[in-house]
Length: 415
Image (cartoon, rainbow, N blue to C red):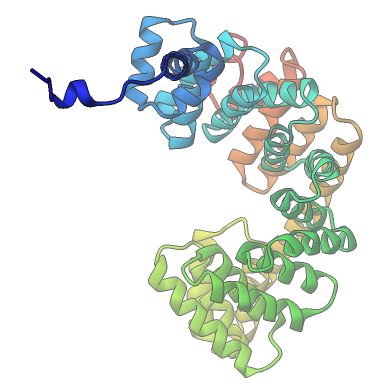
């Protein structure tokens, strides 16, 4: 009897084809195993950890506290999230495991800068810049710290190094322009902000700074137009709109500029009714329109909200003179002249600091001038900067005990 089963009637593979099939199966199995080994291997740890949740990363570290890659990923992601309370211990742990990691060192330095722990921030960022001079993010962070301390010469050195290594670092060009403008090096500021705008032509903060630079070199019309463009690109940015108001008030060409200033002040009042500069801006607008009583009202308020702004003393003196309040006018003009003189002395000290970076006593001199201006927080910051250079300086320690009794001088590092 003939067997007609489909199984029996199907053609069988030749032996050579069967061998090829087996080889392919083995290769596929090996590839799968290789992928598993690669995925869980140390060479792919950074990629694998980047896909984990923060909770999974924490579990990984609990299983192996010495896993440097997991510690690094957790620390940097927490730092980027802005959670300083969780990021600080994670960054410190990562730096302990990987003391030669410039990104972790810079991240911890930036966090300390945000917490105003400037001495530790300086130690971390200065070390990162010296040990890893080609790590641009670290040098930029150190430059921003120098700017916070008012040391624009040192800051410019850091940003110059960054743009020398990377001509496309637009933020470094922008920060460099700020430093040059603060040092009254207008030509250099112009070149630096032009370089930033060449890379990011519609960045509103770059345009606003370009406007300020153009005003500084005498091109007020272009400066106002550029700052107007910046405010159009960032209509909700308080700082940019305030800059526009200040330029319009200081460099107004006609009534249309004053009308635009009034409109911009109205926008600021809607965005932030408690913005400290508003009383001065309202008062200055009324003064320029020769509305003396309203001007006096707003400028008197400005003396309370922004007592460190010298222009308030000058403008209110002019208004009082118009109101025939001559003794008050003369008193404020004397204050204005004295403050201007102190500012010149402070600028001279800062120039000396640029040339003599290790002279701690210059910070004591700067603090004295800042106290004459009534700026206690700035004076405390200067004293602490001096103590970073010379922690045992008796005069600076005495100053700090007087200015900030809460600081335990000699037992803990000055913060």
